[in-house]
Image (cartoon, rainbow, N blue to C red):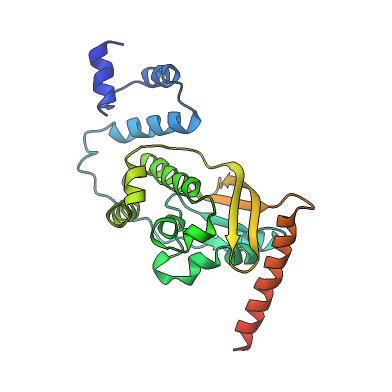
Length: 244
């Protein structure tokens, strides 16, 4: 690969780059799996003469089918929810709805975790390690932008966040990407306190682009007791709401 050709790729001119060249570049730069996938997605988006004129499209409104909601509701020991690459929360079980009570408390959040993260002051309390949560949110959106570059809803969300949040705009300019598959997070719920939860994110084969995430706590830990308290709090709240 010549210096001139590499410089062209570095400037973002990926149209026509062969898979072999892209794989070699990924190996040379020691890209991780998320970064490699992002490079291939960018090259795919650039491959075609109509890319710059292709209209951006809105994603059709998605609603969980009954059997998926049954699956979510069957998870009773931990929060479980479905999100898309824009970080819209699309379906939840009772515990996830309770965990993200702050997200739903403000209608402007529109049940979007990125909007909550950067535009709602409550997120600073909800995420004790706010900087890490913010980094993860932006990297997920950046990954989605490479995977689905013509999603108008995503472009609108990024534009809103760049305009209204310096924290988001700085992170967005870093172009970091990642796969959000497994790990642990620290939350501070207003009703039950601190929760350290492990999570697994599962790509949904029947619904490409959607992720099913399940949280759980270490057995015997204070966070496991916290999830039980959260379940009790949610059941009491729902019972009171039903009586009104």
